[in-house]
Image (cartoon, rainbow, N blue to C red):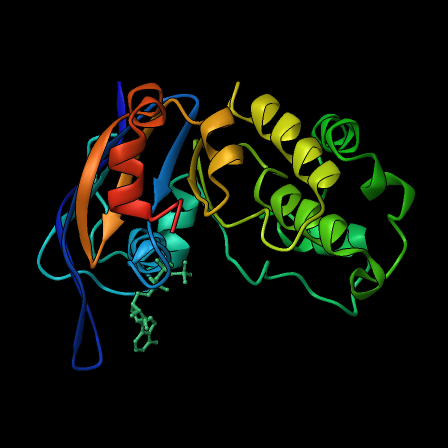
Length: 234
Ligand SMILES: Nc1ncnc2c1ncn2[C@@H]1O[C@H](COP(=O)(O)OP(=O)(O)OP(=O)(O)O)[C@@H](O)[C@H]1O
């Protein structure tokens, strides 16, 4: 089943056309990866889905319902969470306070909190520490944990491995595999090794357009296409 359908999305920021024409389908379940060079329009695509930029024209369908133009809070209430590149956590609040703030009710579901602690043990160990004092990897884990503190159908995650050590990237990949059992992940990623280890389907954005979409398996096997679209060997 298709969970998210993007059709002919065009997004202007001030007088600039940033997204010219974006269309792709995210199937329910697993990890869908958006790849592309710096400045291609990946973050703008996530922000447009979330209603932080207003695409016009174009449409975003979530579970078949047109959510284009809805307020961001209403889009979130439909079951979509966003983990931005800057992580969006509150440095002077503790780990637990950051998680509580991400709930609608202001209370933890103990079973969900236990699952998060199993996924990211550091968040249990440092639950009373202020978030600014965490390592880069732990902050990233906290930002992902905030997105799954309540059940969601879809989480949009922007470059979670940026600046992280390889061992932390491996731990993140493990956690994402587990999360993707129950929650579809739309992942923007520059780390191709990480992306290909997780992604089932993928699309490449280039200059505000979808330059390629298909299975990750086929894309990973086509080094000429990777070089052309991502300049991986440049
Ligand atoms: N607030 C803004 N005002 C003007 N232009 C913007 C704004 N935000 C993004 N852009 C431009 O839109 C284009 C796409 O940016 P976007 O952040 O979506 O790219 P990206 O693919 O996520 O890149 P990166 O991998 O570097 O994060 C870039 O040329 C960028 O300069």
